[in-house]
Amino acid sequence: MTVCVIGGAGYIGSITVERLLEHGRRVIVYDNLSRGHRAAVPDHVPFIQGDHGNRALLEQTLKRYDCRSVMHFSALSLVGESVRNPLAYYDNNLTKGVSLLQSAISSGAQNFIFSSTAAVYGQPIHSPITEDDPTIPTNPYGNTKLAFERLLWDVSQNYNLRCVALRYFNAAGASEKYGEDHDPETHLIPLVLRFASGDSGSIQVFGNQYPTRDGTCIRDYIHVLDLAEAHILALEYLEKGGANEVFNLGNGTGFSVLEVIETAHKITRKSLPFEIREPRPGDPAELVASSEKIKRILGWNPRYPALESIIESAWKWHLNHPKGYLS
Ligand SMILES: NC(=O)c1ccc[n+]([C@@H]2O[C@H](COP(=O)([O-])OP(=O)(O)OC[C@H]3O[C@@H](n4cnc5c(N)ncnc54)[C@H](O)[C@@H]3O)[C@@H](O)[C@H]2O)c1
Image 1 (cartoon, rainbow, N blue to C red):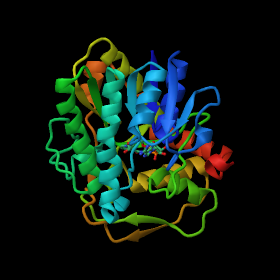
Image 2 (image 1 turned 45 degrees about the vertical axis):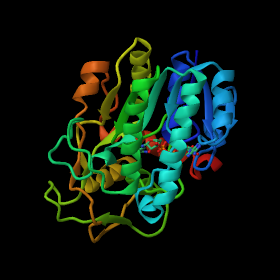
Image 3 (image 1 turned 180 degrees about the vertical axis):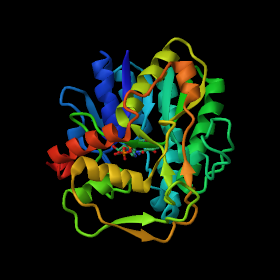
């Protein structure tokens, strides 16, 4: 039985493929390469370049490789871009997502793992955030992810498809071989590391008057290897007949923007100038996950919770790939 990793040429998908292979799984990658990298997929892994909205190609691929399990990482995932171009987000993440689900069902797939996001919660009502908290997204990206989750639950009532949605907080870090190479890059840790390796200008810190320990926003960073491991556990859970579930995935500990910059400075030993900018509208002061549910039900436990190990792994990858997958 093969696992089809849709979006497996992207950041989190490629590292999950690596972990699946280490666990002895047969894997194929399906990706349209709109945001991913061919070099992020090992040569020996079957790679199909296709859009997840291409119903015929995806269905044929799933049948050809006898894929009983699908991991769905493929999405557009930039909050700002989603505000500027909501139709592209609804089209890719939802409309084409319906087609993706149709392909999965008609090919006979049974297990489905979806990359959801902390953005489904919007402004948190308390910290840490639990899965039962209200889901009121504040941008089109979060809306499309929440809508796809609901679609999944509705569809799985009528078909033989069991599903897990993993709501990631901030993925960060790298494995030895694969890392984060987005264009444009909007995530704090890779941006800070670009400055450490010589990008001109200074890091922009949006707001320093939040009700947090140093006034800057607090976010929950989870090592991408711990995220990948959670996918293996979710797959095993579904294969054993586990019921549909939604799980948060975070460290349970938040780090402020200034703490990230300070830790990156210690690791890289580079000066990291920053300037304080106006806070961004709608940016919550603190977004920290409770991951108690996934620990309790799947036995997941982060192996790399320290911010140092997350940044160290990202820095090592960055030094080996100064131009990302082009180097
Ligand atoms: N990176 C994070 O911190 C984070 C946090 C929360 C949720 N997520 C979610 O996790 C998933 C993976 O994130 P990532 O950072 O690895 O993103 P990424 O952009 O690196 O990877 C996404 C991959 O999907 C592919 N793709 C996009 N649309 C496609 C389509 N229509 N057909 C086929 N392939 C398509 C892209 O080419 C890319 O390779 C996304 O769904 C994202 O919303 C990421």
